[in-house]
Image (cartoon, rainbow, N blue to C red; front, top):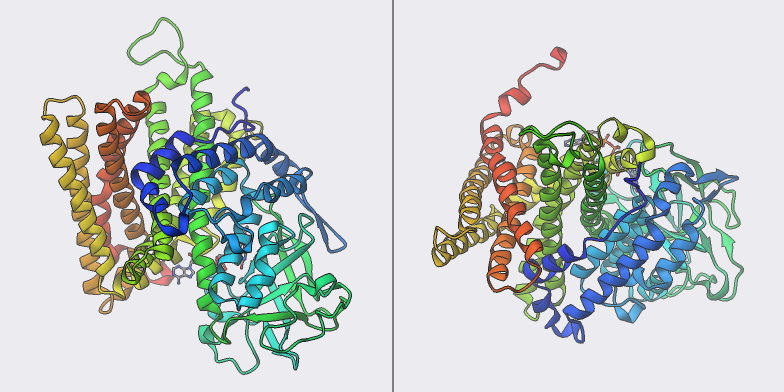
Length: 632
Ligand SMILES: Cc1cc2nc3c(=O)[nH]c(=O)nc-3n(C[C@H](O)[C@H](O)[C@H](O)COP(=O)(O)OP(=O)(O)OC[C@H]3O[C@@H](n4cnc5c(N)ncnc54)[C@H](O)[C@@H]3O)c2cc1C
């Protein structure tokens, strides 16, 4: 079985195409914030990143599956090799790729960080989760941390001396964070004492770094019920010690004495157990207990509030938005790795004669249905990567565009795309890894091919950081209904523009040209997709307040429809660019021709589903809602 799970090759050609032709990295590079950055830098960064992830991180993927972390006396020992790989990751500057230079980061655009993170996740989803959560913690600090907190924590998070975690979930509070019960009691010195139980905390305890900074949602004693009474706290595993860089001083003028050379002490937060999981087994998923009075600080873990009291969920949303986007990228990543394995297997496995006749059995890539599976995988991955990078570019513009209005506008476009990137790309990861297994036949079901691990690993992506339903609720409520469909309609307009460009291009090259038929098919399906999406946006707006249950009965299909149509739009843009480049003989002809074929496949086989989805959403609610509970 030579289709080895250890092999991963970063798809740099596609990444560079997307960055340049679709996500507008050259325009971004012209912003003062990115002075000195250009496409050559981007290419060099991607090359280095590929070398590191292919050579150092990818080979540990299977090791992690076979030798998950172990918990002994409250300490987690991670998979052999992980600590060294993590050290090389942070020493190579990879944690800081998109974070500000003033805190030790590289200050590169987020749009470049996205493919870098894709490589890390494709190489090793379990290990990648640790930096992913640290990235999100840094985002939260940048938005809600005081200047002192930022200066104290961010450099350590970027250097990998510390890592970050996200502590939201409790046994009774999963999707519904209004139910959080963990308590935070203010202390005279400005700190808080935290007590309660958090579950499912990724990398909540480990031996990769010398300290862990937990970002914890908790309630102060007089906090109102529900989401309006939740605050955000930073709780280090160790407090005090040299420099006392745990946030104890300078938060609001009060000093707690932690800064004045007090010894490093174990804070009162403990890993009670590790979960046994279906996949990502090398990522320690911890039950964390706060306030067990077992440490060196007395009862209650010492923590410091981030931002204002009772605005914790708002800040956590910043962290979650960053994490949700990153989880979408995880979806593309694991899908890409599964695709590469499936292609390798399809080219070597010999089975059955060609349907059109062949003297002997052929490699299975000759069978039309195997090709259909590979093309589906490829099309979903390329569309997903493009959509994620375009969303990342909006975030960069939202941060650095010169004009205030322009920044706000890009922020809204980015935020509209986040639930789609999270929801659609991760559901696609399930489909793509399942197809990879199907391509492998029975061997895929055997653990030694490694494709079973990818299938198991991918399954969590549509669940954590908000299930697909939670993303879809966000898309319907906050992103579509709340602004009366304003941003949704901007996307519809953008699609109309791409249709127009396709029509003009077909006219320019002549309907008889070889690629004209491809562009025409793409244009036809894109037009039908846009109409379907428009119909659904109108339906959501007309019924959201009148018949919410009916609208939300179609929320996940709406998210899928939006993903298909917006992903299809990026593929259509890609086809247009590729066609022009091919004609100008600018670029790798094989790559460009394949891009057009993949875009055509996407249109014929995936975009074509849009009208059916729209019909289900606008007319199918009764079937979802009618049965009585007893009838189930
Ligand atoms: C491996 C792993 C790692 C994790 N890492 C972390 C972490 O680091 N930090 C952290 O805080 N949490 C973490 N989680 C928790 C994760 O985010 C939650 O499991 C997830 O948000 C879902 O919550 P739940 O499990 O309670 O499911 P529930 O909320 O009970 O959901 C059950 C089902 O009901 C549906 N549902 C619930 N509410 C609605 C609604 N309003 N509309 C429509 N459908 C709804 C859901 O979509 C789902 O299908 C992790 C979980 C796992 C398994």
